[in-house]
Image (cartoon, rainbow, N blue to C red; front, side, top):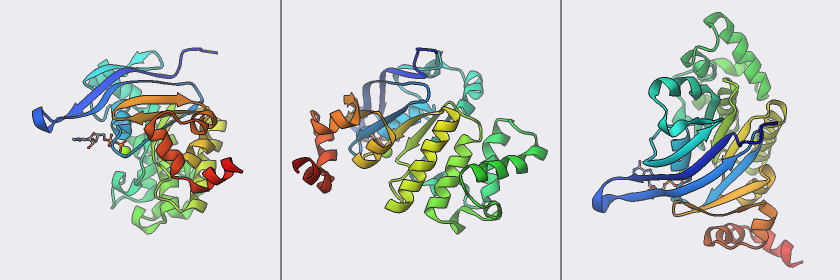
Length: 262
Ligand SMILES: Nc1ncnc2c1ncn2[C@@H]1O[C@H](COP(=O)(O)OP(=O)(O)O)[C@@H](O)[C@H]1O
Ligand SMILES: [Mg+2]
C-alpha cells in the first residue's frame, strides 16, 4: 500500500479583498486525507470551510501554501496540467440547484463531466447515465426531468451521480445533507458510504453536524477562524472538546448531553 496520503494540504492561506475590506479566510491550514478515507471538516459558519474546498478544486487560487494531490502540487499547476487532474477531484454542494443549469435535464447534468472531460463518446453517454442513475438508486425515467421537478433528496442523488461519473479519487462534499430532512439525510449518508466501500474514493466531508460527522468519519478536523484548531477521532474530540468551535457543536445536540450524563 502507498503510505503517502492522497491529499496533503500544508500552510494554506487565502484572503479576500484589500486593505480595510480584507478578510483572511484561511491562515495556514494543514490537513491530510488518506486513500479511501473520510476526513470530516467541521467548524462554525465563516470559519473558512468552503474557501478551503474551493481552493482544493482550484475554483479559486490560494495565496500561498501547498496542495499535494497524489504527489502532484495542485496549487502550482498550470491551466493545462490542471485539466488532466480535474476529473479526479469532484465536489458536491449543499444546494445542488445552485450548481445545476436550471434548464438542463437530469441526463444532461449527469453526463456533463463526461462531455467536458471527453471521457465517453456521445454514443456511450446514455448508457453511462443509466448506469449512474442505477448506482444512486434513481429510476431511469428521471433522466428527462429537470432539477426543479424532482425532490431535494433526488437532486442530491443526481449531484452524487455527477460527482462519481469521472471515477474520482477524491470528492469534496460541502454540507451535502444540511438542507435535507433527517430521514432522507440517513439515506444519502448510506449511499455515500456504499459508494466509498465499492470504489475506495476518499471524501473530505464538510459538516457542522456532530451526528453526521460521527456517522461518516473516523477522523474529524475542526476549523476556527481559518485554522484547524483540533483534530482526531470524533468520539475522543467530542467527549472532551478543547476548541470553542468543538464545544459549540457538542452543545448544539441536547440529546447527546443527556446521554453522556446518564
Ligand atoms: N468571495 C469572497 N469574497 C470575500 N469574502 C469571502 C469570499 N468567500 C468567503 N469570504 C469570507 O471568508 C470567510 C470564510 O468563509 P467560508 O469559507 O464561506 O466559511 P464557511 O464555509 O466555514 O462558512 C468569511 O468571513 C467569508 O465572509
Ligand atoms: Mg461554507
